[in-house]
Length: 167
Image (tube, rainbow, N blue to C red; front, side, top):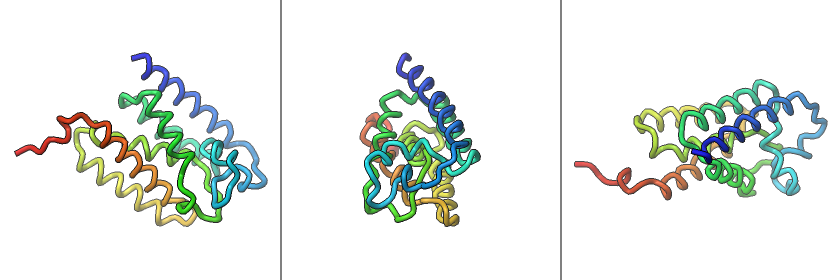
């Protein structure tokens, strides 16, 4: 119970920080965004910068919803951040990417064994990821990476009762 409270507090604090930071003027996105050959510091901070206040609000809303609606521990939240920070270089483009989306998609992917309507959930996630490919300014590849990494962690942490084949 304490860990869930820590995660909720961390999610609320993160939401406030990213919304406030979305009003910050960034003259050079390559200084804070993750891209091919980006500095290590950019990998650590790119999740906290957003292209607009709307972008920040959508990511903050997603983070808060997932953390508050499911039993997300502080460790799962930290794992999501670490997965987002270590995104493989071959998935990155020359255009800097900013945002908390990779963290959010990781958390959503890790929930697959906890939701009741799995097919509906997976269909919605497929739609969200597909829509990301329609917009040129969205790095949908990082969304896919975050979601697949979350699925893998969710599978590795799933209780055996979730994995049994029912006849």
